[in-house]
Length: 390
Ligand code: TGC
Ligand code: FAD
Image (cartoon, rainbow, N blue to C red; front, side):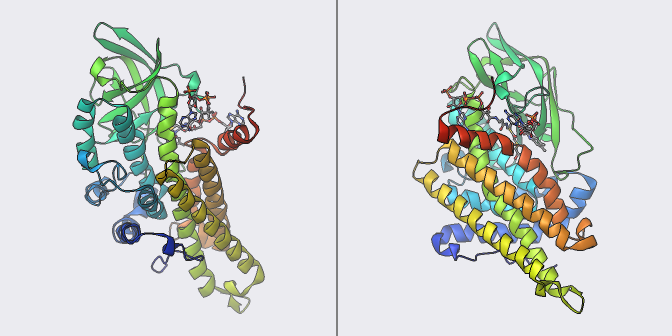
């Protein structure tokens, strides 16, 4: 299909600063020139395109919203969101890589780490010279991380970690894992380095979704780390949940990108493909679908732009982020499925993007808080009553 044209039905570009437009366009060009030519192969053969990492780092996309004093780009929330949007236009796996590195590893080191930890990791991670992963989910605890069984026990001047994490993005390729573990003083985060005795990160294979992304188990078998590996700035479940709020913000923007990719492709396709003697785009049912997609994408764009402005003003609450993640991934998945249908049999092939996005979005619908969990977060917020269980 032809070049990506984006979608700006309500002239939302008028709401962006020159710098934000420049960063969006730079990321868009990077995705068109460097990602699109390789992504189908990576997806089909199930590998993460590591060759892209130096360029992603050079363009300032790793920890993009963290301060320049640690070698990061120091961008505002909207610019960071636009990067996520454009990366996910390419593939959710690419946005996942950047979300995990920036929001789930660099951000907690920045927000909860010691100065020594920040100096050690942030500049290298911004350059893509060190890769990180975030270990919260366990085989028996996904939506309820508060039930985690991984344990860190004080041992002289250090800690012994035992337990297992599962479904961890970047695990096998990571140089450092942020591992959340239960201690006598509540849940705490530990920086566990690759090669530490007793620590391994085998890759989880046979995925039908996010195939261009590495997903792994983390095995912790009497892993000893010094106290200097503990993130000293936070105790309790609010530590990891605070990181999720950062990552979910980028994911909400990413959903817009995946939806725009599918819409753009199907619009071109239905204008060119003829059945019953005229273009598919000339049929009312096809136009109803296109109108629905333009409407939902425009609403999703407004949601994340406003959320970005709230974040800029320090007024964004985790519940606002839940609403945006819930809505935008829901509509992106719905649009990807509609597009797959409108492409007919062609839609099931790697020649077109819709099915790849659709399969990816099934994971995005589940990770970083499932659709149900975000429904209950909003429900609790508006009623004051928790319906999670217990
Ligand atoms: P609850 O009692 O509600 O909260 C415990 C403490 O945490 C605070 N808090 C938050 N803080 C910041 N951001 C948030 N989103 C927060 N949500 C809660 C809360 O104020 C409280 O603080 P304090 O000071 O009173 O102690 O906790 P709960 O046990 O009832 O759980 C609430 C629930 C269900 C919403 C939460 O556990 C949850 O979000 N579950 C979903 C788990 C999840 O999203 N896991 C994601 C794993 S990482 C991942 O998927 C990465 S994929 C990345 C990629 O590849 O892109
Ligand atoms: P469960 O919690 O078992 O949920 C199963 C179903 O039950 C869902 O539909 C859910 O909505 C529903 N449900 C659960 N509780 C309730 C309730 N109270 N009320 C109503 N419905 C409920 N985790 C990490 O820590 N780090 C990562 O980097 C990471 N990367 C991931 C990458 C991929 C590709 C995937 C698929 C997952 C990743 N995860 C990661 C894990 C992800 O966060 C969890 O899968 C997610 O939180 C859901 O947990 P679960 O899979 O155990 O599902």
